[in-house]
Each structure stands twice: as C-alpha cells, then as structure tokens.
Image (tube, rainbow, N blue to C red):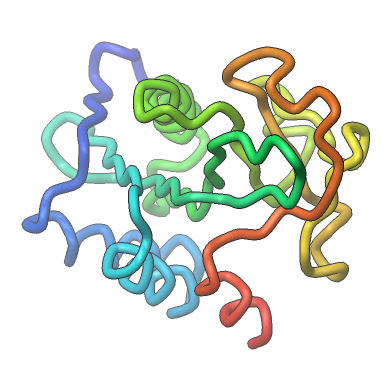
Length: 176
C-alpha cells in the first residue's frame, strides 16, 4: 500500500493524453480501452477523467461518462470505465483512491448514481451493489450480470426500473 499522502489525484489535462493512453494499453494489453477513452473525450458530455500521480509520475487513470436509465424519473447518472493502473503500481491502493475521489467529484458534477460493469467482490467496498437487485438491467445481456450501481444520493433510484445504457462507444466496443 502506498501512503495516501503520496498519491495525488487530479483532473487529466491535454498534456496527459499520451501517458494515459500508454497506461490503458499496458494495463489492458490491447487497444480497446485506450481507443474508448479517446472516443469518449471527443463525444461524452460531460465527463470526468482523473489521473493518479506517484509522486509526480502518472500511474493511474479513471474515466466517468454519462449513463442513461430508461425509467420515468431518469436521474442524472454516470458510469465508471475504464480504470487502469500501470503494471508495477497495481495492488497499492491507487485504484481505490482514484475511485473514491472520482465518486466525490461525480457528486459535485450533479450525477446521482454511478454504474459499472465489474467484479462485485472488488467494487462492493465502494458501496456498489448489483443493479439487478434494484430492478435495473444493462442493455447488453452478455454483460448484464456484472452491472453494479452506487447511489450518490440515497434513494434516488427508488421506484426506478428499466434498462441502463452507457455512451454508444461502449456498445461499439462490446461488439468486438
């Protein structure tokens, strides 16, 4: 574990794009997530892109973009993906710090709920629960069992049932 004081989290700048791409490529061993981030930067509005520095080197990245819930209330929501930590820096708490900071920033943007597709054992520590338990399902049945959500405003999803859709770039990536 790295001491929280040695991990700096800040918003990504244009000057960070090449390093973020390198991290995405290395962490996922392919172009899919790196290309997805490039597409989202160009077309997702709003979005939140954070980097982690240890001590002054960018070693992690997380991206949040709008998600849409097909329900009557349609509360403002986002989705977390991708999150990437440079090999050699994984397992040191950097991803946790990125997620915690990101969730706080998402609340300040006005997003009321955050969705993701991922490992429940990992993401439950941040308050994520299975979205299906709330009557919400992901638009792609292949990934639907992995859909999780955390309410940044407790109760915001009460009575909300329906399909959750991510930015169209995710649908394109999932088809690969």
